[in-house]
Structures are given as C-alpha cells and as structure tokens.
Length: 153
Image (cartoon, rainbow, N blue to C red; front, side, top):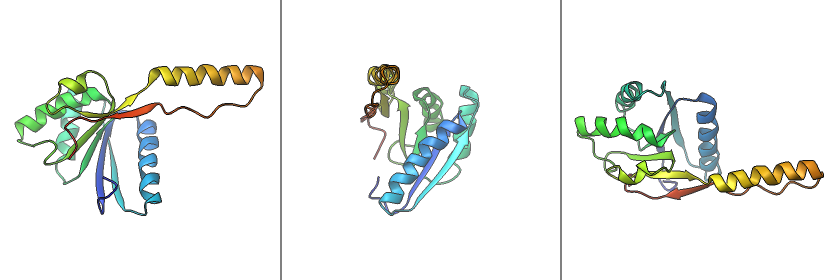
C-alpha cells in the first residue's frame, strides 16, 4: 500500500489517544516516503450496534483501507458487508489490531497486526531490572508482526 499514489485510510476505534498514536505512526511512514495520505478517525462506543452504525457512516465515502482497533470489530463489519453486498478485499481492504483466533475464522480471513505479548512482557521486565540496577535500558523488541489474511488486496 506504500506504493499507492494517495492512500485513503479510515480508522475505527474506541480510544482516541491510542488511535491518534497509531495514525501518527502511519503518517510518519508516508511522510518518509513523501507520499500523500488521507487519514480519518471514526470513534465508537465499542458495542456491536454502534460499531455497525459507524461502519455505515464510514462506507458513505470511498476509501482504500479500513483499520479496526480490535479484531472483534470485524463481526459487525462482516454483517454490514453481507447486507450491502460489499466485497472485501475487492471494494476495500481491512486490517485489524490484535491477531486473535477470530481472524482465522472470518471470511475472508482477516489480515492483522499481531501483538507479541511475551516479547512485550520480557521488555518490561528487562526495563524494570535495568532501572533497579541503574544500567542502560536495552532497545525495545518488536512487539508486532503481520499475519496476512485475505482481507487486503
């Protein structure tokens, strides 16, 4: 997607601060590549009903990629796509954050950014030990990986 001339991204989430951090990371990556990007945040209360309504709002305009704050948000998305005959990934690509087993049973299977909780916990312990021992803090381990599904064109 970094090759697309201008990527139009919509982010659906419940936590503004988390969403803005993630979107800033995406903006930075595109800025480094000197490519324009159109990012918009859509907040919901996290209930399936509200997620469904926000998805309806998001789909009133054309976009390339829908980012979901959590894997579970794909459940109302799937319902909406079925009801309104929206083909994923042909009409739009979808990526979620989490990478739980739910991603593998969705149709199409969901591409996800997977959290490596073991690496994250290990980093925290090492950081705490470094603070206690007053030694240099080791650089943080990558705590994300991409699990490719069928939801991205």
